[in-house]
Image (spheres, rainbow, N blue to C red):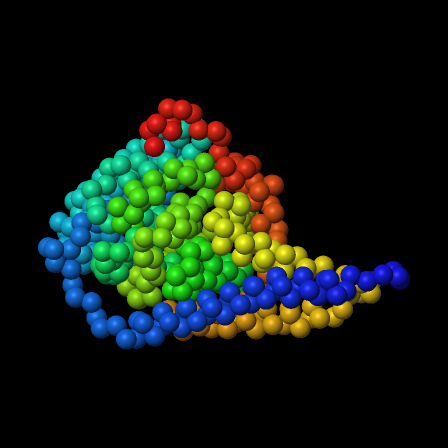
Length: 403
């Protein structure tokens, strides 16, 4: 055995990093409780009329022939006034006829436009390039982004747009994975992991914080988007068309952010279908962490230190280098995460899946650490392309001028 110990320093690191993580989770849980109470207090919103703001729905689409038709069918059934919204499908170099399929819905979807993108300039994320092209074409005072594999209730546009008052810059809602079938257990775990991110976003935004959000269910005031120069500050980052935008708006300080827990704001998205696709998706999400704003980055680093310390603690304990205090914090972590999930399920009226939660707890720490490191070091595949860094190649002078 070793004749030295890491105590009390090791326990101090666990306490400090773990304290930040657990305290933030508690505040997120209270934010979810606030959302739940807010929805219960609200009276049914009035149906929008001709005075409703004009809304542009932008759908970046690449090789989504399998889903784009159902997405547009739902948008054709919205209760929002047909003359007060438009839908812009940005066909981003699809090779499966996605754009042609979208074009067949001109007579069923209000103000449908299909824009073909033939190439992506160097130095910009492909999705941000598609969104930027859509924004340039959009006429809406409110601009909603979503994905080409999503399904929406008939009141979706009405629900999101009703969140806007003159001070609101961004409104977002919950997205869940749902294929409408009985899923295998590993898919249930994927869905629960996705929900945990969304619940965290909902509770944090309800508290006035800006950690993360989902671009498949995101509404922006055009003036707010222009106020922060759109994606200009982070256009090279492969991810972040949603979260980094949220954080910039929060840092700007003049725009209200809100999360809608109304049932009509719920979006259902198609999940990744193979474990390898899930791996690449999580690596992509992890790749943008170092681009976060300062508060979010501090929390991410505290979480990383806490999780890494918990992972190493059993080994150090067995070697006699650290105390057993980590066991208490590990149990506390699981209990606090369960409380957040329970509050999220209640706030959004979703059925809990505690068996998947228990299994997820067993792999949560190594998975988060692996994705956080791997997204920056290993790289990932996305939409048929390989990305080895969180950022794209340097921007050319002409591309900067265009932005």
